Every structure is written in structure tokens, then in C-alpha cells.
Amino acid sequence: MKFGDYLFVFLLLTTPLLGKIIHVPGMQTTIQTGINAAQAGDTVLVAEGTYYENINFRGKAITVASRFLISGDTAHIAGTIINGSRPAQPDSASVVSFVSGEDTTSVLCGFTLTGGGGTLSKMQLANEWFDIRAGGGIFCSRAGPYISYNWIVDNHVSDAKEVDGGGVYFDAQDSLLHIVLINNRISKNTLIGKENAWGAALCLLGNASVNNNLVTYNASNSGHLAGAAISSWSYIYQYRLLLKNNRIRHNVVYAREGVNGGGVNVGLSIHARIAGNDISFNQVSSERNSLGGGICVNYADGNIDIVDNRITYNWAARKNNSLSRGGGIDITYGSNQSRILISGNMIVGNRAMVGSAFHNYLSKVELRDNIIKDNIDLVWEGIPPKMQQHE
Image 1 (tube, helix red, strand yellow):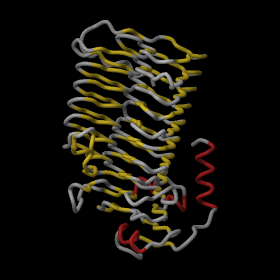
Image 2 (tube, rainbow, N blue to C red; image 1 turned 90 degrees about the vertical axis):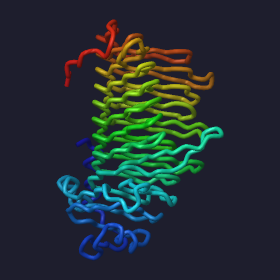
Image 3 (cartoon, rainbow, N blue to C red; image 1 turned 60 degrees about the horizontal axis):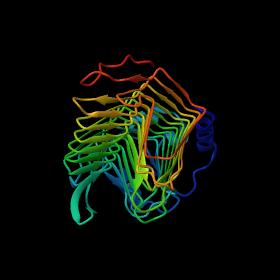
Image 4 (cartoon, rainbow, N blue to C red; image 1 turned 135 degrees about the horizontal axis):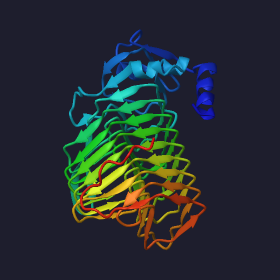
């Protein structure tokens, strides 16, 4: 644990719970009936066990938590499981949903969330409507909750033209809502998209703070385009992303036409600060364009700071005659208004055909005080042999 982790647990253990405590299953037999009975400021406190539910916060400013909230013992996280694999409606198969304007006074803490299949909705792009399925573990639409100390694992989103957010999907749409994700474990979630797949772990389309999370072994596969374990962008609104002190490792992204980022993908109108993260052993491959094994920044119109990160042993794999570019970092088509700073990073042991450490195409970038060494240009055909795991 870092100091901030100890401080958070200390506050949990020493701050009295406000409002009424609704015990599940002691007072209410299910988590959802506990939520239904709760009023603003109440806590729904859940005993260990496996709950086959797909819960909805229903716009309530409440805390829903395992007994980790009381003890700080992570055994309660492992032992308090919400399994979303038996949804009443197959089109609403996210494990947890926030769809009624919830903000950071709506708190989810201390669960294992698994078995989610995402929520199906319609999206319009230009004049075309198409299906999108998103949010295997957590689905947030026009809502920005506080998500802490959860294990979001083995959620699988597929069977739609576009699939987003295998672990968590957040879409602020036209609101100023802000999601907080802190001290979560987001692992082994998958996306399989007929055309597009964005954010095998996290798809963040709004203001977001993502701190001290473990993001590992998530995977995407798509017939057209895909992007990164953590993907964030905005076509219209000037949203802000803080991605700080996370471990983003061993994620794999494949798409037939093109991949933008293995660990992190940001672009368009997002202003992002990517600081103090470990972004390592991530892989991208495609039959056409594989860009940014560690980080990909494309079509940036906002300011992007990439500072003090460890960006190591990622690769943009070359498959057949595809383009493989930016093993550590790839920057593409930044606007004249965008400022991109890459400073104080350790960029080591990454692989790509072009720009094994870093590649910039038509963007204004300032490189400063980085350690760049032992990166390898790919020269062979096909996906390179599995790299030695420099743990």
C-alpha cells in the first residue's frame, strides 16, 4: 500500500457511517432491495457471499459496500461477489449501472464484480445509427460515481457493432459529471467487437480521475478498429482526464484494420495528464496499422502531459506487411492548438518497426529529460516471438 491507501483505510475505520445502515442479507435479502430501501446518505452494507444480481443505483446518493468499508480487510473484497451472469434482461447485463445522474456521492466500495456482459444501446454517428454494447462490470451514462477498492474481473462484452469498456464504461454525454476510480483491480476483461472495440478495461468519455489502479491482462479483438486497455476521447466537449500512479500491464489489443494504443489511448478534445504510471508489457497488433504499444495519442486537440511514467517492454507488433509504429509512444495528427509534453519518463525495451521508443507524425511535441534506451526496431515479418518477461 502507498501512504494514500493507508490514509483512505484509516478514514474508513475511524469515521462513523452517516445515515442508516441497511444490512444485506440481514435486513434486505438482495443488494438491489437494499438500494431500493435506502435514502440519501444511507449505507447498504453487504455480508460476504455471491450475489447473482445486476444492480442499479437508481440515482441515489448512497454508499453500497462490503464489510471492507468497516475493517479494511481485502479478504472481504474477494469474498463479496456480485455476479452479473444471470440478468433478467440480456440487453442490461452490466453488473452495476449508474444511469440516473449519480455523482461522486454515490459510492461503490469493496466488491468483486464479475460475469457482466454489458448494456446494449443505440449510438448515432453522422447519419447512421448502430448498436453499442458497453460496460461489462460497470455502466455509467450521464452519471459520475465514486468507485473504490473493487476487483472488476472476468467481464466479457461482445456481439455488437461496437463494444466499449470491458471493465467500466463512462459517458458523461453533455454533462459536467466526473467519475473517480481509485484503488481498483481491473483485470481479465474482454471486448470482442464486430467493428470497433475501445477500452478493454476502461472507456472514459468525460471528466475522469483514475488513480492507483491495477489494470492487467485485459484484451480486445475487433474486425475494424480497437484502442487500448484505457481509452478516452471526446468529439465535442473539453473533458479532462487524470491518469496517475496506475499499473497498466500485460494488456493485449488486436484489430484487423488498426489499433491505437496497447496501454493507453487518448485523443480529440481530451485534456490529459498521464503521470507516474507503470505502462509495461502491453501489446498491439493489426493487419494494417499497429500504433503505440504503450501509449497512443491521436488527433489531439487538447493539451496532453505524459510525465514521470515507466513505459517499458511494450510492443507494436508487425503482422504480415502492416505498419508497426511507436513501440513506447505514438503521437499522430495533433492540432495546432494542442500542446503535448513528454517529460521525465523511462522509455526502455519497447519494440516497433518504426520508432521503437517514440514516434511523432505531424504533431507539436516537446521531449524533455526522458531516459530512452534499449528499444528495438522490428525487422522481421510476422508477430515477433514472445519477449522475455523483464519483471
